Amino acid sequence: MEKTELTPKQIVAELNKYIVGQGEAKKSVSIALRNRWRRKRLSEDMQDEIIPKNILLIGPTGVGKTEIARRLAKLVGAPFIKVEATKYTEVGYVGRDVEQMIRDLVANAIRMVQEQESQRYEEKAEEEANKRILQVFWPKKSIKEKVKNPMDVFFSSDDDDDEMPEEPKQLEEPKSDRRQKMFEDICAHKMDDREIEVEVAEQNQGFQGILTGNSTEELTNNFQEMLGSIMPKKKKKKKMTVAKAREIFKEEELEKCLDMDIIVDKAIEATEESGIVFIDEFDKIAEKGRSNGPDVSREGVQRDILPIVEGATVNTKYGPVKTDHILFIAAGAFHVSKPSDLIPELQGRFPIRVELQSLTVDDFRRILTEPNQSLVKQYKALLETDGVTLEFTDDGIDAIAEYAYRVNLETENIGARRLHTILEKILEDVAYEAPDIDEKHIVVNKEFVSGKLNDVVQNVDLSHYIL
Image: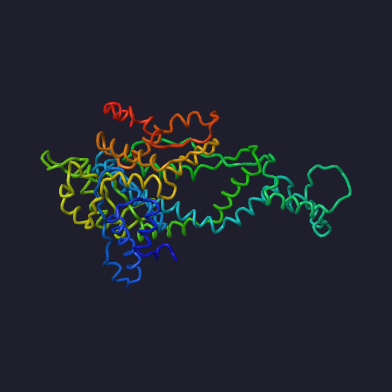
C-alpha cells in the first residue's frame, strides 16, 4: 500500500510505534492526513475549495507534540519543517520574517526530491564513476592523441588503444582483456584501498559572508550562489583512496544526470500539495491580555503569519509558492497565555484544538520499553559496543519511571526528556568504566537505581541542578 493511502487507523498504528499515549492528538493528525488523500480524488473545482484544517496542539513540553508532527511527515514522505515562532519578528524589524519558513520548506523539498531522483540514477552514476577510476589507472588515448597521420586510423590495431601501466613484460592475455578484468575488480570494490591521484573541483569560498544579518538572509544566499556560478571552478589534484574517489565521481555524475528544472517543479508541487509546517512555541506570540499595546515579537508576528496560513503566494529563489494547501500544526504549552489570547483571525485558522496530557508513571514506564528504538534499547546497544551487557529488571524500570515522574512534579515538568537526564545519571559510572571493567554484565534493578539517585532526589535543591 502506498504511504499516502494509509487509513487513519493505520496512521495511528504507525505513530504508536514511536510515541506513547496522546491518542486524541494522533487521531486528529491522522484525519488531517487522510483528508489530503480524499481531496486529491475530487474534481479540480472542489479541490480548490477544500482547505486543510490546521491543528493547534496544547500541552506541556516533552509530551510528544513535535514528535507527532515529525513522524507524520516522515510517514508519508512529505516536505516538513519545524520552526520556533519566537525567532520571527514583524516585517520591517531586524530578525527573520515569517515568509522564510516557506522558503526553508521548499529547500527541504528540493533536497527530498533530489534524493529520490538520485536513487533512480544511482547505478548509472556508479558505473560512470568506475569508468573514470579505470581511466586514471589505465588511460585510454583519445583519437586526437593517437593519430598524427589521418590514415593511421584505418591501420591502428586494438592493442594500440590503451596506455598500458608499467608491468613486467611477459606473455599474457591481450590488453583489452586485462583492462576489462581491472574494470571488474574496480566494480567489485576489490581495489577500494588503493591510492590514486584525481582532479577535484575546489569550492569557491572567497565571497562567503559578504552580506550578513537574518533580515537579508535570502538575498545573501542568492548573491553567494550567483557569485559561485559566475566564478570558474578551479581544479586541483588530490591523492585519495579509490573508495573516496568513487564517492566524488559518483556525485559529479549524478549532477549530470539530474535535471534541476524537473526537480524544482516536483519540489514546489510537493510543497504546495503536501507540505507540513510545525510552528513550536506558538503560545509565546500570544498577547497576555494585550495590556501593553502591540508588540513587535507578538501581535505583529501573528498578523504576518495570518496571510501565510490563510493562503498566500511566497516568492522564493525557486519561484512563487502557494501556501493554500500546506498543513500548519502549531504547538505550545499555553501555561501563561491561552489560545483565546491569539488574534481572532488567527484562532479561526486553527480550527482543530487538541490538548495533550501530562505523562504519568505508567507513560514513563511504557516510553522506556515500548517504542521502536526505545531509550532502554538505545543504552543497551551503546554499551554493547564495549562488551557490556545491560539488563534492566522490571523493578528497575519502575523505579526509573517513578523517579522521573517525581522530579517532574517537584522541579520543572519537562516531560519525557526527564528520562534522558535520569538515565544519564544512573549509567554515568558504567559508561565511564565500561571499556576497563572486568564484570561485563550489569543489572539495573531497583537497588541500583536508588543507589544512584536517592541522595540527589531527596535534596530538592540538588535535583534542580543535576536532574
